[in-house]
Length: 121
Image (cartoon, rainbow, N blue to C red):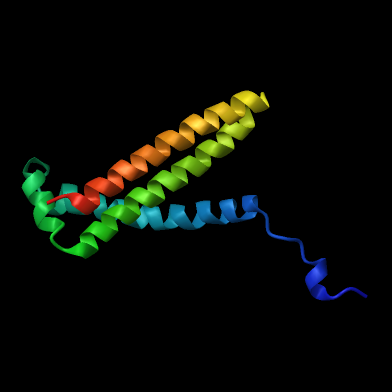
């Protein structure tokens, strides 16, 4: 009889991708609602300007909060888009090209967002 370890199926990238979508979606609900409450309910939208952001980002925890929101939203959306591309783009060459464009665009947006959060004064 084979040991129990060899009978277990290996967890694939798709399994972890599915799990990430569930966890990140749940976390994003709370992060997005908190972000919405802070910028639209607690503070007047008209007063949300660079000075407001500078004051808020004096605290590194707010920068971490906003970076986490950025990272999870981009990765969650990118993962969902990857699934859609796999479902609807039939040609393997076209699928690879579309994914390359999407991944590059997402990487640029993530780098730009991270750069903005880190270097904003």
